[in-house]
Image (tube, rainbow, N blue to C red):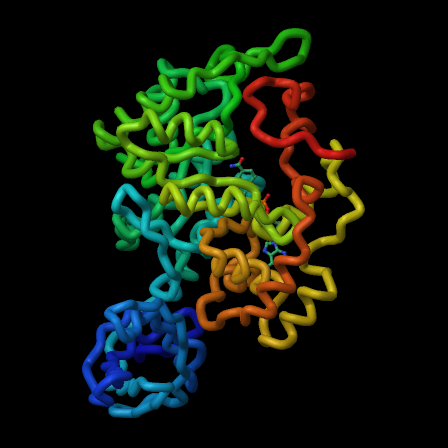
Length: 422
Ligand SMILES: NC(=O)c1ccc[n+]([C@@H]2O[C@H](COP(=O)([O-])OP(=O)(O)OC[C@H]3O[C@@H](n4cnc5c(N)ncnc54)[C@H](OP(=O)(O)O)[C@@H]3O)[C@@H](O)[C@H]2O)c1
């Protein structure tokens, strides 16, 4: 196959970039961070980040893109004070090369788009993972509690057999709520590794700050059909999480569904700081204060349910506004989508990634998976970002308050969320 030919293939264009100095006017070769993105046989979009040199040695991150049509060798393009010279099409690549990554405090990088796997049917997992990997997804989100890790492991194995490399993947798993005690950490992580058929995971998160009593066969204990809550010693659990890094079973560790007080308690006592916080985030629930907090402590946030979890919104009702429409149906989002020639889902995901969060949309459908990862060839204007910021409903927009699953959990002292005004 020719480089760049075929729907899922891309072309790595070899380019040189020259930047004109604002002071002297001279042209100097500069090293951008490239995302080369092939759209079709006739158009290639190059997206790049550049640290602009400015007066007084200050630098500014700029995110920009330029498109080339039918690239012959030595095509030249000017953009502001930049000249980009595209030398040749060098090699094939998959869409994955275009996905931005966020640097974690652990030194590793998390791809800005991952595949959410909760609620992908086990019978559809093989195909869903194979499709996602083909489209360039390299980040996969799972958890012991999703009971799907063996199915994911089987799908990954097939990919490895075809030449896929472990080091190219970023796999997240989570310590279940009924394993939320120091002596259970290693046992549950080892079980996840066994099911996933991996030697290590890239990220291991404590799934929730509260805990449940453990029953038989690594399940939740129940009394009269009800889960039994158990207090969690966060610092003791975290210490064991750190030991998993030292033992090589996990590269980076983090938290999910924790609030600021709970995070700070761990952060202040940790030897290995949490580098990731996975929480619900979408246009109706933009947790801006939490985001600022995470930025301050160098914790990358991952947005779960980034499309607003349309299926579950209708089912949960503990104070949440059930009447809220699907985010993808909002006229404001549709209007912006039309303007950028993108889908509503792409606008929602782009808005979140642009705010600095990784996203893990779930889809079993290949076309929607493709949509969800093709969000790196455009940027939303400040005005459009503001419009979407304005859709935030705060706590009323939350879908996963967990009360639907665990009756009475909102009265638990380790419950992380603010009470909603009903
Ligand atoms: N840490 C936690 O406590 C926690 C909690 C909840 C979720 N999560 C993680 O976050 C992931 C995603 O969350 P989620 O599944 O609740 O919600 P979501 O990703 O916001 O929404 C998924 C739903 O949107 C649909 N969809 C996907 N792409 C679409 C597109 N381009 N256009 C229109 N509809 C689209 C999907 O249907 P199709 O499949 O038919 O495309 C599915 O019904 C989960 O799978 C899980 O990995 C973590």
